[in-house]
Amino acid sequence: MKEEEVKELVMELSSAVGISGKEDSAVAVASRHLERYATRLWRDRLGSLIAFKEGENPGEEPFSLALVAHIDEIGAMVTRIEEEGMLRFTAVGGIDPRILPGQPVVVHGRSPLKGVVGAKAPHLLSEQERREAPKLEDLYIDIGLSREQAEKQVRIGDLVSFDAPPLAMAAGKSIAGKSLDDRAGVAALIIAAAELAAARHRANVYFVASVQEEVGLRGATTAAYGLAPALAVAVDVTHGETPGLSPPDVFELGGGPAIAIGPNYHPALVRRLMEVAADERFAVQREADPGSPGTDAWVIQVTREGIPCALLSIPLRYMHTTVEMLHLDDLINTGRLLASFARSLDRPFVEGLACF
Image 1 (cartoon, helix red, strand yellow):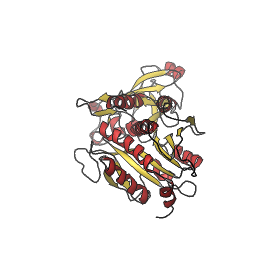
Image 2 (cartoon, rainbow, N blue to C red):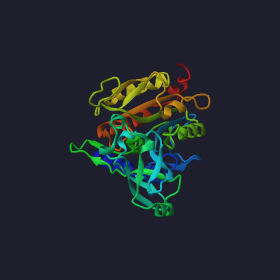
Image 3 (cartoon, helix red, strand yellow):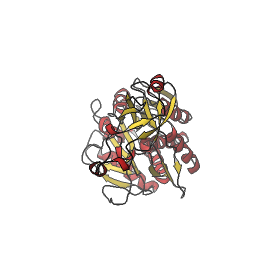
Image 4 (cartoon, rainbow, N blue to C red):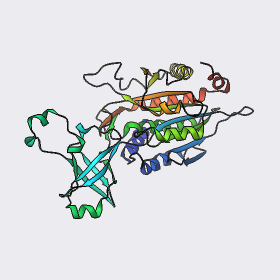
């Protein structure tokens, strides 16, 4: 895929709404792109999107590779309608309350309703309140309706998404917007699928856009159990370089995807990813990860009797906000590395994964 196509793809994915548990709109966008390259496309019982592309492995027992990125995003849920018509809410996934006041949102009621997140004006805060970050329970959504009007349009449990269109930054290589965690990963799967469409590969490849990652890695759990691939690579985001932070906590934007190293990741897969990146001259970074990454890789590894797993992470600034920012080169190189890795696989390598 050309750079301009990738830019349009990631902006379209970012614009789609797909809060955990209600990912249909985002899945529809991903489906439209993946179906061009897939032998078969379906959704599993939990709702994860799975695209399958058959490998060419004549005379040998087939083996399968799963490439997994989550498609859901953080959001909110209405919990109460106040006397004044204001909506109280709770988080769906990890919302940072510091970024909420003044945010435009869409309340997905009987019909979509524009709203803004309100809070006390700074002039009316006490000295102590000014020193503290806002709490979710102190915030509300103002949809400009009375309580009687609001109750006709909104129900307890209705979801709320951020109303934040993606931005192409002035330099042209960076994109900012909501839900790039992890629509960027889904875009990388689509890039890989496009690359593999014109290449020979032995592995049967599953491209999995998993659901409900932000609320417990659920889609990857059920998809990995149902597919039982011989090996898997999860694709997510990691923290991009930011003023006041330095390595190893953050990674260079434009420096390539980060390959994670630690007990969650099979050392042979890590080595192969490093070797392929070196052979193809893809820039990559190394990420030390001795514990739980909080990504789909965590649950894939321990599915069934165990699935050899690796993690590629795209550097991302301002994670879990409405202005998450990435560099297009990192996204493109992630997709191309996934495709080259898939092409490198053969049965002897897969059989060797049983031995650490």
